[in-house]
Amino acid sequence: MTSVATGTYAGALAPVRAFDAFLGDPADDDAVVSTRRSVLLDEASAFPDDEIAAVTAFGLQRWYIPAAHGGMLDDALVPLLMIRHLARRDFTVAAAHGKTFLGAICAWVADGPIATRMAGLVDTGRPVSWGLTERGGGSDLSRSATTAKIGPGSVRVDGGKWPINNAVRCRAMTVLARSDERGGPRSLSLVLVDKEEADPATIGYEPKVSSHGLRGANLAGIRFEGSVVGADAVVGPEGHGLEIVLKSLQLTRPFTTGLSMGAVDRALQTALDAAAVPDGPGGRLLDSPTARRSLGIAVADALLVECLMLVGVRSAHAFPGEMALVSALVKFLGPDTADLLFRDLTRLLGARALVVGTDHAGALHPSAFGAFQKAARDSRVVGIFDGNSVVNLNMIVNELPNQLRPAEPPGMAEVLAPLRADARHDAIDTTALRLVTRHGSRLLRSVPALVDAVDDGRTSRAAVDAARRIGDEYAALLAEAEDLPRQSQPDPLAFHLAERFALVFGGACALAVHLARSRAIPGPLGESDAWLAAVLQRVANRLGADPVQAPVADAVLDAAVRVHEAGETVTLLGSWTERS
Image 1 (cartoon, helix red, strand yellow):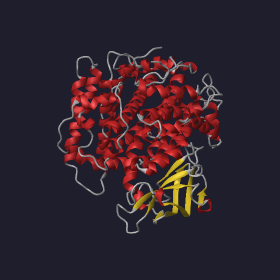
Image 2 (image 1 turned 180 degrees about the horizontal axis):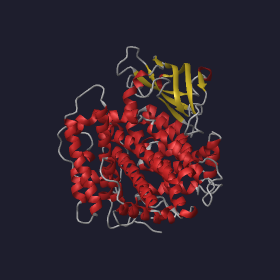
Image 3 (image 1 turned 90 degrees about the horizontal axis):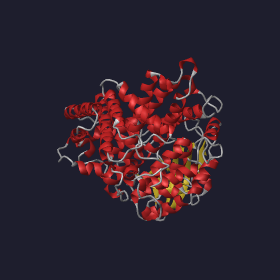
Image 4 (image 1 turned 30 degrees about the horizontal axis):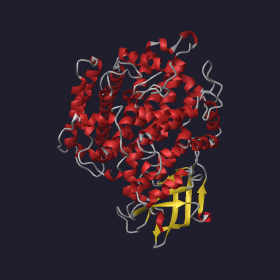
């Protein structure tokens, strides 16, 4: 096959294709990450040591290190898609290996000598973890009880973090600790605790956590009992720990959509495979109008998550000053939509979606349904870490006054440019990250213009009508937000408003991705806008409009089936196997 660079995000996809080829066919038991072994390891709650070692030998960790510090991270879409492909095969492997990106991110935001030191640690392939949460502390990081006594030549860390991914396995951990007993916003600092620097006798562990999902992951607690490291282990200025963490979360939240997309890819693959196989006297699910509608809606949900993923990562490059809001919108709506997809497909597949093991798939790969069930359980964790759904909704509520602040309407070229397939992206400017935005999200402010632009006489009436419905919702939300009382503790109405804003943002993402794509180049889902109509009708339905129309669901499903039967992933980004 051949492809045109401007139609397939070719620059970003080249290393992703290489990684995908390295991982091999998951249906092959000899692949680096095979479906059968993935399910067996999960049932045994066993850590995937061999898979992690293989991915590390490939050098995935080098894409976690910014190019400015000697690594491969330039366009953040590359490691995001690599994590997606890894999660499609085994979510646990992707979460365990990708945790190093999270563990290192504060050093990249802080910059300076600590970033150089962190680059050396990450490059070894040894895990780096992120110690933020504590037992009984929930998501309120300001309540951190772990202490860091920062002296002229050393730092002493006391306390514990729980539950932490790779707590036991990690070579080092970036720890949020209280460095000032007086409290206040400058009372917390970040310390890089390198286990090879601290006395091993001062570091202890709590037992592995038994979890519903990520059964094989190294989720545990860690205790520091007078662990001493050098003064150069402080990450960023003393007292700036919480600020650095909050800015870092603006980058890690979009990054987690790669995990969600990997799980969604697995779910769609299993459902489309199963739908094509006769199932008793009822025949194929693909021949049932009800099942077809459910499958079409699932495809729409998957593509909405992908649009959120793309907008989130491209916004980090192009508009870092807006990530306080954009990251919260993406982090709330992405996992929420993935959860809906798994719920609906579980109902569609029935009892088969609940089985575990490797011998229940009938005509499909022996591990297919076990892998679906594992992905369904694993993916639910995305809505919890890096700020749970309530935390992100609260952040959206806090940003509403900024979204309402008068500002010049952004130009369409400015909004769409980062999403074009041939756009080049400089490294993310972490110095431009802000704890609060000035004017919210320019993509949200562009909703009226995006709706007008799609009503061009070439886009289907179904897509345009749904876009108009979303545009009307945005106007209504702005009016409601104006009347929202300013409270220190938002009430349920404010959270409901924030959820609707997130859905409108999802519709805006789909519109922007559609308008940024070249109509002259056939996309992987065909030249039609069937996918856009399905995504917009699905968003509009979640906002209270009528359900997705059967013809719209049929059209996007037929396109997805064609892609799936060709052995490809259902995606708007392009073929993983094409060569430019």
